[in-house]
Image 1 (cartoon, helix red, strand yellow):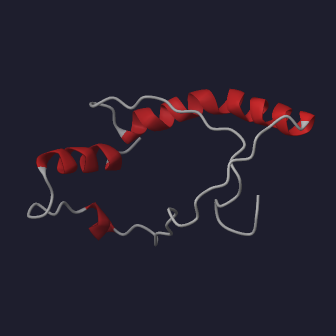
Image 2: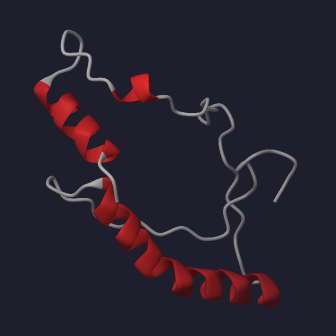
Length: 94
C-alpha cells in the first residue's frame, strides 16, 4: 500500500479467461472464486518475505468520476458493432 488509490506495488496477480459471450457478472463470479486462495497465498508470501514487488505504471492508471446514467448510453454513430456488444456485456448487472 502507498499514499495513492490503487497505486501500490503488486504482490500477486492471476489471469483468467473471459469468453466472447461472458458478461461482467461471470467475470465477477470468476474473480470471487479465485480471490480467497490468492489472498492466502499473498499473505503467506508477505509473511515469509518471499515475494517479488511489481511496480505499477502510474502513467497507465486513470481516475474516473462516479458513473452517471448517461455513461451507459450507446453512441451508435461512433462505436463499432463489437464495441457496442462488449459495452453491453460490461454493463449488464452481475
